[in-house]
Length: 411
Image (tube, rainbow, N blue to C red):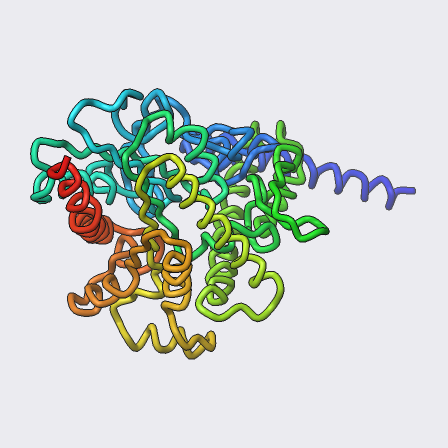
């Protein structure tokens, strides 16, 4: 009897002490203004919704928030400003100014480039290079509009083209295809994020659109990203600072684990596909790119597909690249670039591969074109954007603008 009473007292004292300790700790982190992360609203995409510059989109999964602005710190650091149409940069009129050649650039995070300031992005570098150095422009001006959005795959970029880009009446469309993960993003069987539209084969082998993503929960949408503390009620996590700190620790761990997983998954991009999932991913991607090019052609516009190199392809140290290839049984790091170039040759659209010239530049100058704060991985840094903008501008000037100038002279 007395032993049970003593046990109950001891448990009560322990619980009381624990409660007081947690309460003091909660007060401490609030006084110190330590910040963690809150639980996202269910039904959104964990990486992009909610943020200060993204909103849900029932067609594309997410898009940029009109008129949003604020400091963004991830890899690099930049102050982001979006116009009333949700495009990064100043306001752009739907009506194209006279004596202007308008270029629309689409792509994922390499194109939206939130890691660097606006004027350092490759789209802005392109515009400056073409306006200042292309001899075929005469009295015309180049205007580049950036439609890139973090995390987009080719399906989302196709919807952006059809639902937004044509309203601006561009003369030329440039699509940036990121070798590192665009292939996976186009496959519902391989993508890490399922909160987006996908093109899929039905039981009869016909390619159609799966728009089921709005009904997916966060856990379903983020296949490889599982934060266990989110099993607790959202109201509890979002009101207790200690839980928010614990959540941030787990989120950081999950991001690192996911990055490591995707790093290994990416190695399949550089090899001839042998299993059905990767064969299907290539089939869908090639059909999407072909359809994209045909849509541009049907509008009477010109098209250029630019393949954006992955960090693995352009690490300046040849020994590191060799070790990566040997460890993942890769014979040719530029297999995907060459395959997409061959697709363009077959289907009649131009492809500009950045991979090999980027590798040559990085090795010759012993410089990292990807990465920040001493790293060589991740997104392009300012050097990468500058080189890409200059190379693409030179390509456009010689191939597209020279042709346009010749046509104008004849007319």
